[in-house]
Length: 462
Image (tube, rainbow, N blue to C red; front, side):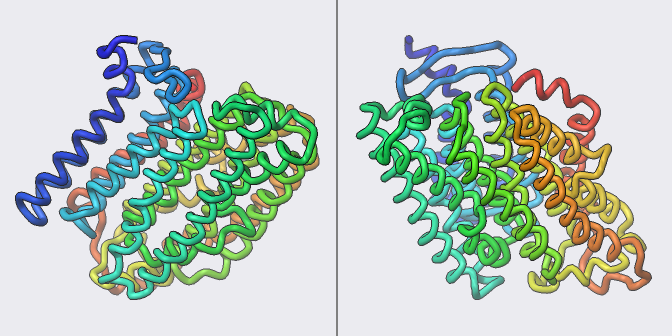
């Protein structure tokens, strides 16, 4: 493959890299320059457009054989994740507007793009670390608002490091049992009898469970989500979650999953669904509630791996798109407040409809979609996953997962009840519809409408 083809295949990554370099130079030349936000939006949007163009053109190839591969589904996966990052950048102006947030976010996005194209465990590990390391700092830069940010970032660092160690050990055992570090070797290990390949598979899956905050490996998520700033929390809940699940989908590929891995992929995600939804009911703060909601949604996503291989990647990416756009919409519509603790309290959403009706309507849509209520995109996403699980013959697990999902309706409806069914006015904050947050909200709203009305178009690309 010639140089031009390599540059074309990796154009999203190159645009992000160019953005990182420009932002670092800008930070050095002019400390806290207000140009950081528009430049970040430009480079991320350009990278998303480049990935979408590659997908629509049907470009297929391996710019680095055995390490990086590009197909239309992987290109569309990059486009979806990068597009989700744009509204996060837009509403970050209320919390940042300038500074280190932007090169850190683009660096993490670069790692996510590598994960989508990875064809070996080496590239996958590089992508995971490039995605994760900047996020530790994103949690920490909320220190001026939340003193507990340092502790939360350390907890995230330690547990994420444990996941990386587990992943590396699993990859080394896969190499020892199959003689290859290609991602296809995971399917070989999955179908091989013996202790060595079985241990390798379990360690790799455990690493993904840790990164995605599956019960009982979820301890870092509530603290990290709560201590980070609103944009950082949105980034972790959506983009980082998407990166981990894309990496898992790349590893599993179309491999058939059999016992005992079926039980591991069913019991722990089911526990995440139930525990995440039950614990979210008791949370007084939005970010901590979203953290436990995210744990439950990670359970739904890992249920997708019980389904047959050909539809696995499609189900995961569609769910991530629907879940991501509604999660970001909830954060973008959240009223601004100079006091971060007050902004996070669910009780301060009481009477929001009477003061800021458009914000309340947007957040209400987001809550209903995350709960999986039709006709919102979240319903279609859950339907697709559980349909694939039933089609694979795991009807009992699908029914249990559906029953567990109904537990989540309570705390989502509690938010709606606060906003629409109480006369108490919001004491602090201003309408998010003013300023750049309005653009982020409208982008998410447009994306949710497209997903709800034209799900077949998205599914066809994946």
